[in-house]
Image (cartoon, one colour):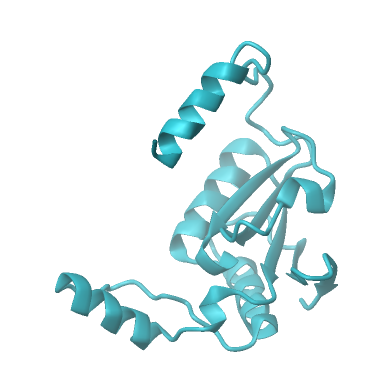
Amino acid sequence: MTSIDVLLKRNQEIGDIVPGDRSSPRPSMHIAILTCMDARIRVFEIFGLLQGEAHVLRNGGGVVTDDMIRSLALSQRKLGTREVLIVQHTECGLSMVTDEEFKDELEAACGLRPTWAVEAFRKVEDSVRTSVERVRRSAYLPHTENVRGFVYDVKAGSLTEVA
């Protein structure tokens, strides 16, 4: 049985117990949280969030890319968010590779070299600062005055503000 099959089975089992959400797609706290796709980053638990309070956007590294700006533009302009919280973390896989290494690996595996940036980094604090600046400078985002960046320590469970 694949992982997808397991998840579909779970959905069938809890479907009657946990009905679909009929609340608004607009987050009640008017905040978007950008973070890494790492399974150790339990956004709802870390911040004590309830369903419907925030938009949670994830990608590899939790870095602000053009696609994150696209999602934030929709979140702010169509769904009412006004604050942005960026959370990257210690022991991130993107700090253990380089853009060129990973692009070389992909090219060797499939014969194509990606045109997109991997966004690898050495110091997570610098990556957070870069991401915060990308949000603050984006012409597509009307709300850039309340953007803050943090590093989440995956072992301690603590947050340190860096931008």
